[in-house]
View: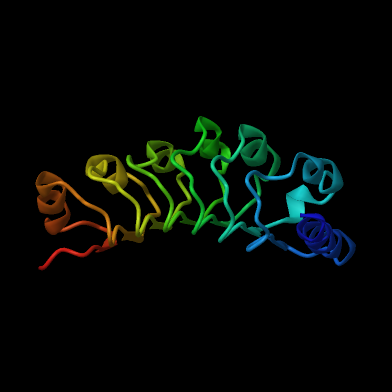
Length: 174
């Protein structure tokens, strides 16, 4: 465990000291975003554009995370055990891409549809049966949605077959 903590600390310090726009905390065995990181990154949080928290054991992402990193363009949370996102995710008004593949979502995180800048949503490998096709269609920037390996309901599959203004990747036959 101490090694994992030291690894996280090293990566965070590199981000701060080098003024990087990225923070990579993938494969760190995190079960949540470390509270102490908010303090360390307080002065540089506005510069961070990409955060990777892939392949951890995170069950939740706090509201504080989304209200701290408001300038994020990309967020990679694939390979965790997330079941939902806090409502504060809608504060991410610069987010272009979110990767939530291979988590434990059983319902589509609808607050994502309120992020006007969002272009790419990856929800491959979850347990989602329904998606808000109308809300997604109303998103001004959405270009790509990955719903592969989800048990989509028949009516949702039908809705996705109609012409949409964004690309949909799914496991159904065309």
